[in-house]
Image 1 (cartoon, rainbow, N blue to C red):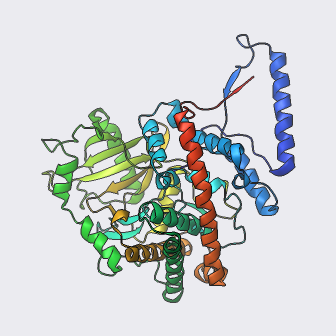
Image 2: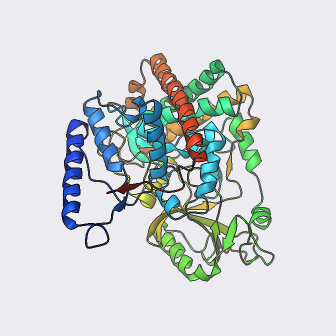
Image 3: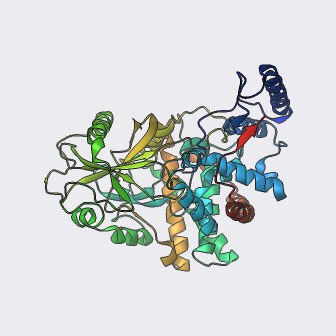
Length: 500
């Protein structure tokens, strides 16, 4: 998840020249008021203030671009101006982690420097600000927001049966369906070059198969109207995905004892990944009880009586969300012998990276944890029943179940042919997620025919997606070079401040 973390919001702007004039006048008024109030240290304002979030400013840019496409956006910047934009956006995106000196902040910044694909995965806000206001005419769906080859995988459904589909809902928001395709095509191009080692021609073929898989899936659901209930399981999935199911097979008992349980089986082990916080047992029992009530989870099923055995902080997980608070709850299973326990995850939820950037629409996915839970319920047919939202320490957290068969693809093991098959399967899975926007989501008309119409002529549509991605990749190469240079010079050690 790569969203802005700043808690304070800047004043809303309308975009264009009027926004510039308004900011200038506000600054003059503020400076005049400060001079009247006297020097710092007396009763006047502090001479140092944190730089506020630019979310509202980008809302103005997105609106202005949708109405008047001659408005300049960050993607048009180059040279040092672009470097400053990259630096400021990454600092804003990680403001809370930097100010709180979060344990994972330094680790994440180092991780982003290691490869272009990791940088792409961890800077969704930077990527989507370049798209502010794009595709205003295109059909609206509940977009995933962060589509790339490693955000598809095997996970548990409502019956604890493994299924394949989209698996990261941190950035979900209603917006043009093309936003997910653009992000996905770019992700496949970067990954197939960096991980797969493929040349330009092959990369284009792999990325185009993702788009073709999407259209084939949309055509299928347009004809059969089965997106509301259909699931990609081991028995009905493509060969490339069936292999993933095979790799995901692991007994729950072995999974628990090999990775999580202490020598007694009554709690979490303590290591570099897990820090038990058993003193908060009653607190998290209340969160689990609330979640069970919200989702109508029975207390006589595979989760037993939903009794919390232990709680731990989880460290070092994720790419975009690395450094954000994350907790694991150990739930006693029906057997009571530590062989069928469940693990629930509570992860800090934040603003979607697409918030304020997508063109204006009539739909509201909700806020923070509620928005993420809505995304999972829309995108997956009969998905994980533990997806939900709770408030911990005054902050919004999303919840979900960890499972022994949760598995992502190993991209470095794919052959050239397998890359194409995998891209096509991911495109089909994304099509189902989008097609469910009029079944489980808020759309009040059939979306599939509109999307198919908007993709015509299809050859031109594919070429537009590929050209967008190629430009985005080259821009990202430059951004990554700027980032690595800034990281070495300490640019991300502290948040930006505004001085009198």
